[in-house]
Image (cartoon, rainbow, N blue to C red; front, side):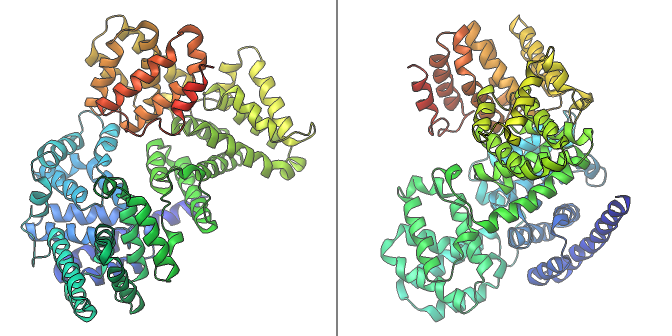
Length: 608
């Protein structure tokens, strides 16, 4: 084990040295293609975040020319050479190291803020990067100033995109915005003339093979907007693919970028999803697009079946994420990685992650078992997905349990712990039992043991400490300890406490990934007391970016799941809840689509 760790450390040190050389050479030769090839040849994609960090940190202390070169390189390598998750992580590391950077670079806050703003404008960082990163920073960190400067100083300014694109003056007329304009012009000219050779010449003259995805993206959007030009534009893309001018990776990336922004496109092109799906099908049938490499466009992604190769790739990634978590204990990193690897929240992949997490934990010590339970509770996955994960887990344990009886006991304890942590409900346990009808089946035995554990005296406290407690919680707190602390601070606030003091206490818990519990408990107090104080607190937390939209959504979902129980004490709970959901949408805390898939239906059913 120690050998493997030292080997990994040595590999990383070697990568750091080579990455630094590649960055310095790039600033001398200004050759995007050779830089991309050198980085690819290192064959260490999991360390690419360091390349991002090194590139930007060196550029920050150079002239505007190098700063512009760094931004163009990142935009060119994004997705094709450097995984989006690695770009995200690289910028996170830069923000976290702002206090160190400022020692050598006095204007580090401003320069790094501009790099982040540029990355957002160039579509290589999601805007949510700002709120999510802010939630993990300590209050006195210079990183907080960087995020605030990015948001208020740059991204909120009028015409900010144009200003940021030219923030360092551009170089050789090759800012990303200039390239986009040239691509647009060559496509418009091609639609009018139909001259394929001229279009090919213009594409070659751009000399940006790592930016060819923008040609694909723009051509497809133009085909959706101008239906009469569809055949001509698709024919151009087909010819560029057949002749190797645009490679398959860039074609997939171009379509992928459109899928990511299809909801925004739908505002201008009402049937955008249908049109895009039609174009994807056509391109796939003609053999120049690999449709299986794309995300689903389905309105109900959770019900979508997934190709085997995607499942295999996800399993591999999940295993890596979990191993990393057992070493670092960083729940926020797991949450971030999962969002990237399963950006459409596919139910099947969530279930696979649950199964993989518990399988790996069962083969380790109590420390990892505790960490797995803490993680499961903190991620707040839909209970249906967790149920599915446990069913898959028990099915795969049928054979193992014959030889290793302890497997049954461990699974039962994980199930019982999931109920105590409110990851699963008693009804969920019954649902799992229904999959294993035989009285002698392993599934039945697991449920029986879990239920007997839950019925025992002081069961909640015992189950919470079943593996010694601690896990990944701050200061060794259990989830129950954190819930108790949140409950007490909200009660104090309700009794007349100060809003700022309450926000400070929430921040000092140091568990931003568990803020959904604050939302849940605040809403319950709000419904019980019909007092606006808790709403004002939630508003303050959201405005301070202390509670993110993601955590708001999880909190509201948690309340929805417990409405039937809540209605026993608060008869109009369901009516109040619907009202608060609408208010939250107006405040911008929840996405306007929240609750559309099934929530209203379930609330309606609750009245009968």
